[in-house]
Image (tube, rainbow, N blue to C red):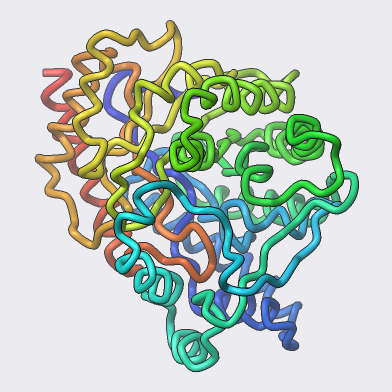
Length: 407
């Protein structure tokens, strides 16, 4: 894995806004409507090539495939894991609360959920979503449950994604390339177990299945990024139940399951990403970074991507004043955020990078983003044009920081 030996390198978390033709095909599939699968495959290959080119053009050093071959950062496992089945639930049986934040700001959350998944969808998908009201949870909620042994069946899908990505990389000059995948915890936490004797047995079964995907990516010569939003987010759920004291033990089991899945993979090939959920929301019940950091650093990875640029967590760069980054590891803090359409000034990005570099060493910092810009095909956090402006600001800020830190 490359390090910032001569300048601050840049990267991001992985997901980027999909083009309209990809969104239209996925929406048709979601609604069990016919679509041209051969045209989709052609469009997908072309879209991956274009998004890689645009990342390089924006100055991103370590690029992804935009996650274009997936429906969402964790939703894609529905197609790649056996043993999971959909379940339609009434709205009143919606998934458990995020935490006290949701009750405190209930009026906000009720409205926000109706708008969250359609805000920047291209036409005509946007109009259909509003007309059918299928995407906002008002008519139904489709959850996933585990009703049988978890197996991996995504071999063709991951092979397609790898082939498309490597073909796209042939035409650009970048430092490295990575593919994001979901962590076992972030599958288990949101897909109810109705088969295994315990949730611990369930999460280890998920880890064993996902290991096949992890190995395929590393064997292809790509960096593996593990996305694990639910490791820190589950703190809020336990807090809501008055069980926050159980969090270290609960999360420790999930980290061990992930490390089991990573067995045999060099940490030099692994990046681990956490966030506190991507919503443009209050976040008043988020876990403090200090609560989560020992668990994060226990993951067998070489680089740690941590949400650090939003207004609820930006101050936590100071944690590194008394927490030592392990020798040989890289910190990839978010220095631009994904949850607002405000574009960060490059000098702000420079300041954020420099704060981390002074505490952990300039060579140990790569500049990143808080989270992905479009975690699901229909969940777009900023306008597509703004994601590129943010990535350009990231590159400009990293250049300013490099000049300062190497002067």
